[in-house]
Amino acid sequence: MNDRGYYGGFGGAFIPEILTATFEELVDAFDGARSDPSFWTSYVDLMSTYSCRPTPLTFAENLTSHFGGARIYVKREDLNHTGAHKANNVMGQGLLVRRMGKTRVIAETGAGQHGVATATMAAKFGFDCTIYMGEVDVERQRPNVFWMKRLGAEVVPVREGTRILKDAINEAFRDWVTHMDSTHYVLGTACGPHPFPRMVSYFQSIIGQEARRQILEREGRLPARVYACVGGGSNALGIFSAFLDDPVELVGVEAGGRGLDSGQHASRLCSPDASIGVAQGYRTYFLQDDDGQMRETHSVAAGLDYVGVSPILSAHRETGRIRFEAATDREVIDAVALAIRKEGLIPALESAHAFAQAFKEAPLLTRDDVMVINQSGRGDKDIFTVADAFEDPEWRQFIIAKGERYRA
Image (cartoon, rainbow, N blue to C red; front, side, top):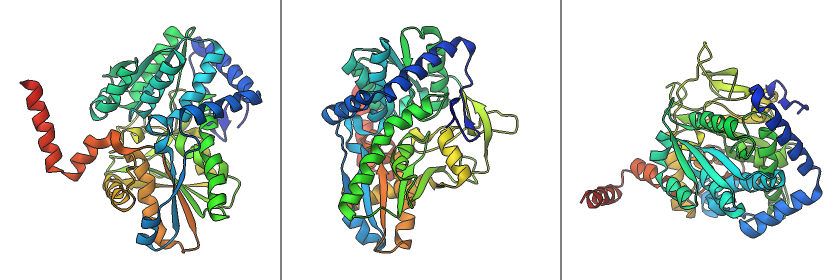
């Protein structure tokens, strides 16, 4: 990365002039924190006492036996406080907000996990909090909306555009322009203008540091492959970062939706529908048409339903350091079912994209090989979507009965 936030030809900070001073303040604060050894120490201490770090690395014995190939390990970010890797980033940014002396935080969220994590951080640090969430995501992630409000956050449904994650990001930036003196935008993934990609990946790197140490302790060797789902890219960069200089194949798995040839997906790095452009403050691959207008996206997983991707991942795509694949909605639902039945693990729909690709490839490796899957979140937030996909009649009847009770 150069000092202007470029990774190869990707990244940068395409921001309105009114935000220039705010971004300069953020860059200075972050650079100061990174150069202060006590800051990382305080961050690790916070995550070990308030969250669940280090999160365990679980040997998936039954899945390993089922596929008959590589030994499968799962990095358990689902056991992190608030149920996902999102806490790593928001708690780090919370320490930075306190260091800057600001009193209010705002955030965008798609799957709701980042929203819950930000609201949790705000409650702990005593910040005012506003969360922007697309109206479509509000409906499909209602349990997370409930918890955000209980934690004291104002949740603002975004009714413009396609009413999903990219529209929530736009609204959060509009808020920040109006309240930048008192407010910090806790961007949830490694996207957006510099320094956000660098900052978010810095805090998420704790995943990879732990995973690398844990697999060496358990197996005495590095894995052949590491898998992570890719929406914006924060959990993938988090676990991949520790293995970039190792002879380990890194596999990022995007949302294939209803198939890459259907036009109903959210795959930016392995789809002909994506091209390089500038939007939301940075340069990367976007799902856009020939006129630069953003296409509609689709994924069964709200957290992967986004038109852009981290500029850091785009740079790794260009160099070939990371291989990118796509898993369809059907493959993801099947992977959730298998992980539940074989291991008692309930991955979030986002994380299940990584499981789906790993399940395809595990039988192709030898019994001497090791693979690690990053389970970036837990699946209880997806109960409505998963129950519908499983066509569970008892669940359907439960929902109908609940509705009738409320109407009465």
